[in-house]
Image (cartoon, rainbow, N blue to C red; front, side):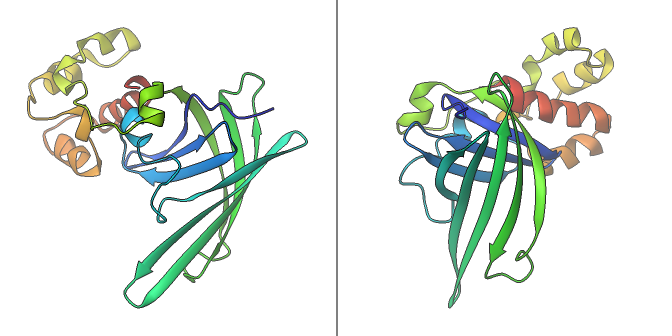
Length: 202
């Protein structure tokens, strides 16, 4: 089974880190780890012609598995650093869930030899964001989330968050998380907002 190519796969590693994968129709694969962001904006980085520091490679179908290696290169002063992340992945029947295990080969000793696994979910992204140059858009502001109550978010926390007009979901990252916590918002609520934003703003 081939991976879906009409969006991105994502894995929420922590409140401050999300891993993304993109596969194209012609066999290319891209990946990146970022602070939480909007899928349509992340997609503008993961495309043919991406900078060398963006992990990228090609994928192949190997029986029931998908095999791909993502390579990234970066100049660090006089040193040239190169990292290969070798993945073997499997898909759910509908292609919306991807599980992958990987090993790392790197010129950086701190990363070389590491191995791990991740579980990804799929989110659809508009074709214009996947294929064409796109100016970063303005996404919904935190004050517009009153509807989250129907998803089980605490009403008192929603009311408190709505008062923070300067906070925007489009720029919510680890620094905003700390600021929200300092303002008295419940950590579980803030973490749920991060997860909701990643899943619901494509």
